[in-house]
Image (cartoon, rainbow, N blue to C red; front, top):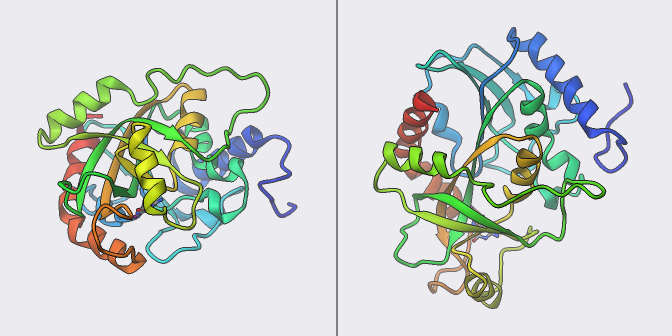
Length: 273
Ligand code: 8IG
C-alpha cells in the first residue's frame, strides 16, 4: 500500500471504510454503537470503563497517524458498555495544525461512522473565557464557532448545522452531572495560543471556550448523521483572562488533577448513551 498523505487522497470515505475493516479484524467486532474521542486532559477517562474488548495503535490503521504532542494518546480501544453496547475510544486525534489536511483530522469520525457508530462524544482541553470556571472543570459544548477557515465537506454539500450538538445529549449529560454548565467552543487554527485581543474577539462573537480541535470533526459527524455530545475540559484561563501565562505543562497538569472526575463522568455517560 502506498503511504497516505491527507492532502492527496481522492476518496477519504473509502479510506475510512478500509480502516473500519481493519478495526473489525483487529478488535474482533462487527460494528460499534458509540465512539469517544479523547482530547488533552481526558487520558484517564477510560479508567472506569472496565476491561477492553480489544485495542490497537492508531498508527497501524489506514489513514491514521501517531500523535505528535506529549499528553496526546494514540490508540483505539473497544469496550462493552453496561447497556450492552460497543464503545470505541480514540485516545488521541490528529489536529489541523499538524499540517496533514482536514481529511486526516476527521478520519476517526468517518471511520467510526463506517463501523455503524450512531453517537459520538468529542472531548477536548481548552481555554476558558469565564474566570469563574476553575481549571480542571468540564463544560458541555452547546454550540461552536469554526474560525479555521476549513471544512471537511467538498463541493455544494449543504449540511444543516442548527442542531449540531444534539440537544437531547446535552440534557443527558446534565442529568448525569447536574453541576455541568454549557459553553460555546471556538476553534482557532493554532498551534499558537491566542493573543488577549483574539480571546476578547472570541467573547464578543459569542464564544466562551477556545481551543484547536473539535469543530471540523463536528461538521464531519453531522455529515455522517451522527448524534453528537461535546465535553470541553477547561485546563487554563484563556490568554488575558488572568495574569497567568499559558504553559503546555500546566495544561497537562490540570488534566491530570481532573482525571478521576472525568473518568467518573465518562463512565456514567457511557452507561446511558
Ligand atoms: I488545553 O487556551 C488548551 N488548548 N486555542 N487556547 C487554545 N487551545 C487550547 C487552550 C487555549 N488551552
